[in-house]
Amino acid sequence: MAHDRTKGADAMMDELLEEMIDPEPSRQDVARRRRFWATGSILVLAGVGVTSLTTSALFTDQDSLSGAITTGTVVLTADGAQFELPLEGLAPGGSVFAPLTVNNEGSLALRYAVSMAAATTTPSAGTAGTGDLRTQLRARVFPGPACTLAATDDAESLGDTANLVDGDFGLPPGPDPAAIVGDPATGAQPDDRTLDAVVRSETLCLRVDMSSDADDTYQNTAAELTFQLDSEQTVNN
Image 1 (cartoon, rainbow, N blue to C red):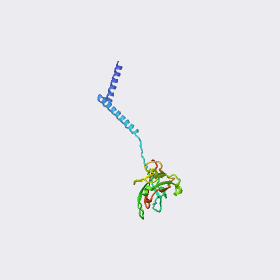
Image 2 (image 1 turned 90 degrees about the horizontal axis):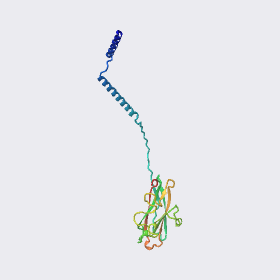
Image 3 (image 1 turned 60 degrees about the vertical axis):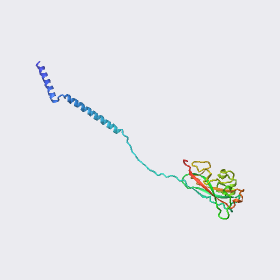
Image 4 (image 1 turned 30 degrees about the horizontal axis):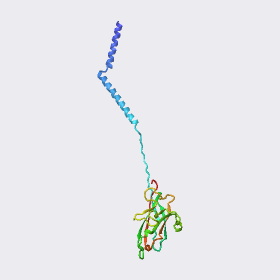
């Protein structure tokens, strides 16, 4: 029994010494420690969240380059088509001719149309006749460089003023040019002429005839014919 009492006293002394060295935390210390660990957990979670956001961001880069853009050109020129109709140059039933060379001097393929207008003019000498020469004329446009009576007599014309008026003779009335070959309206039209990068030039023949039924009132009369060429790009049009 004495031995058991001694053993029990020793155990109580050990417990007392342990409490003195490492006392049991109070309830406040336990709560504070729990708050600390909770805060630590929140910080860790927040750190994980920041890390997640950082690693899931998109890596980007940017570069640029530049280049010049130059627009093409549509340049149409015409050579020739200038002639007079003096008394000694044209008689009833007669014809006059003028070659017309059309050039594409731009960088784009083009299409063009030919229109014409006519006005009366005063003869350079003598007493002018009373007739309006325009009513006795017929204008036609033919393809090809040959511009003679023989070359055009049996050839099919590209345009004819007879299609614009009643009868074979008479030029379109009005000051504005009337289309005789193709149509100057925007876009591809029937009978428009084209000049591209390969075929950049062509020669047309303008022929003007005077009616054989013209009487003396048309002696010493004159008219001025104006041929207008309207061109436009063919690409995307």
